[in-house]
Length: 260
Image 1 (cartoon, helix red, strand yellow):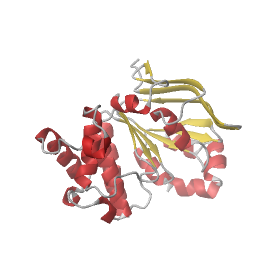
Image 2 (cartoon, helix red, strand yellow):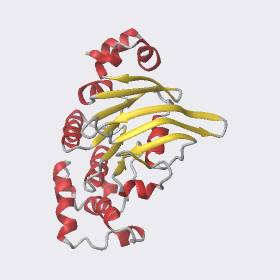
Image 3 (tube, helix red, strand yellow):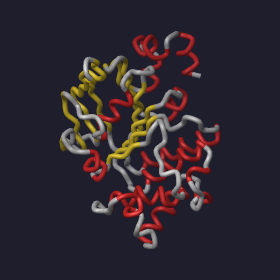
């Protein structure tokens, strides 16, 4: 049996007296789209923080390609191929789209660069420009390359953040509610991008409240409630699971809507 791309065993996290996560298990394979869902406050973003190293876990282990990484700092995990997007988009507003995307590539290649301008110093190199241009084309924002991020509508900023991650060719990418604020056409384009990432062998972990999107894209879903895992299986199985319906969907009516 192949070694999972990502494996969590018994991951727990406390914030003072609050038990945010308790004994979370999760297995993600290369080329899989893995949904991470649950009601607001369930601990999804906290779990993403634990995987990327923003949150240090209090118990359990996190393995990337079989090797434990829970003690590694954020930048080491990033260089090993772990990437993420954020609910609240984090971009350099006064830099151009091209510069923001180039930062994703430069940050991986130039460990000693200091500050944004230091990271972006080698932009004239075709080794930088070509993959950045490819990422811009893939995400459908090549025509915005010279625009300042501050001038872009919210939905387009999502794709800048995606391009910044894609250019670094991550092995694991965690998407934290990437469809928020997108138009229907942009959601379709996002779906295509997610599938393309998985087809290239990337493990995509998708945190999303749009259950139709989760049902269409995800091979597997993990559901958490109050920091505990209550379900792991296919999207179809999740729709019929009583604990999921009660905790996340809230009613039989919503469950039927999710199946539509």
